[in-house]
Length: 248
Image 1: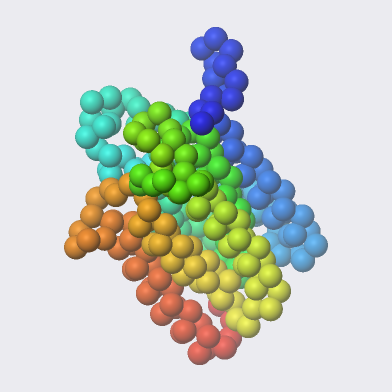
Image 2: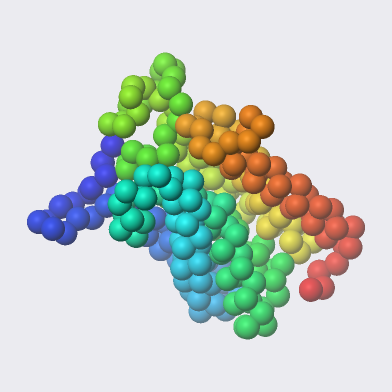
């Protein structure tokens, strides 16, 4: 656990914020390079969209995390803004980020499904770096376990599942799979919808070894959201597949 990489008096460089920033820079660099090579989208549109997803996504992801840990932040409300310490939930960011994504694409008159297919592998790659940051920060760990790869954090109360690393390597694998699939996609929207289905499936399974948050009928809130995301993405996937069209 290395929550602070560098400390110079009152100035601190947090591992979570650093890894998240590195992920954004690496993803944007790869996106722009690919955009130049393939001729879509415009490289500047890649930069604009990453900024939109960053702002809208972080706000939604933070809000969702705070709502699930309201008792903690009620005693110290100003810590709501300390996002460099970690505490972002993907699903909150996915909803708000998608709203910002749709609004921006409409304003720029960019094809939705085509751009979605283009960008989702790099969202997965950014998630990989973010979860490594979670591991270094010591947040979002799993349940108690005594497996050979179990790790301990100051607030874990003993050895636990490194759930952050499970999701990190899953999203890295997802990045690779989506890039490979993108070269053989049969219709626009295929890669984007596969991302939502596969990420949600992985998150649903990882939730079984994470510390439970809000739950209902034996499943965590994140698992219920995963189920809804899988079903919704599957319905859209089948609809797009049956259309067999690349028209927007």
